[in-house]
Image 1 (cartoon, rainbow, N blue to C red):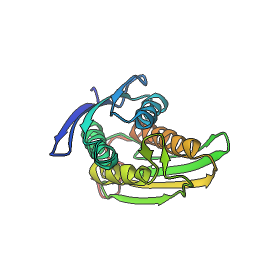
Image 2 (image 1 turned 120 degrees about the horizontal axis):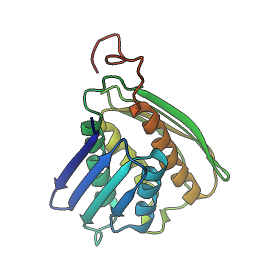
Image 3 (image 1 turned 30 degrees about the vertical axis):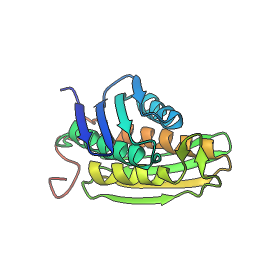
Image 4 (image 1 turned 90 degrees about the horizontal axis):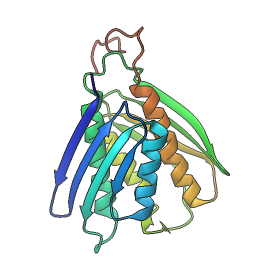
Length: 195
């Protein structure tokens, strides 16, 4: 069964279309209007081996906030839809990933109980036209719409571009593992019997 989902979100601030294939090859077709954000989403697709299409028209004349947050909402909803009933998946995923001087721990649980712990301090306000504070807002939006428990902890780092990029890459690898199926898991990986 293909684990593919589409999600559309249209408000007075943004118009967003997202399509994700959890069993893809890492292909990306991204246009958010924010170059650095595009770069991060391309990395997310490539390193998670997800096929991802994201098309956004946002109120960038205001700032980048609505575009980035609403894209997180749309991607989170698409992930939740693509995962489906969660039967047979690993459910958990974690990785410690390096990128040059930066090192990030990312761990997640597709528990349907949303919670974000985000521990990363940036030293610049922007990378390109991307506000660094929006990194946390993006993952908060994904966490609550996908229904996942997500922990992101920057273990070391000084270059803000590298730090944000390693966060996106580590999230991709952790999510890839969590969504993979395991033949030994015949139902949902929970003593409750459901998630």
